[in-house]
Length: 171
View (cartoon, rainbow, N blue to C red):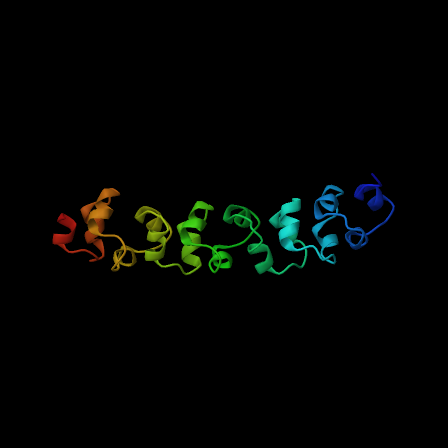
């Protein structure tokens, strides 16, 4: 074997120089080249993710957000890297974002409907905590009074804003 990427870096070779010499993205990552230093190479964002670069590292360089979001990171990794639910909405389901740790409040800020969050696995209590009203929760296709009773909503809560009639509350 020849010299390593770390040895070349130590004597001043750039990431572009090593890319041109056919070093892998992983070898440059292991040699501690930053994401910003990697930006002028022709490695794809997917290759950089596979090499070990984090979302946060890639966001420190001028990579397009859509390239980072679609590079195969999980919603959890993207959330921890600073992406909002609104940033990820075009690329992931509500369920994937719920599993990735996004709260109902964050999803509401991303303009998800109560129905979309119900389908995504959020509970009615989580929706209430996230700022949705009982009126929004009970819209057709969302939560029935029976479902809300199963989550320990009290009759007075269901009656409070007129969302459910007595027959629906009694079930």
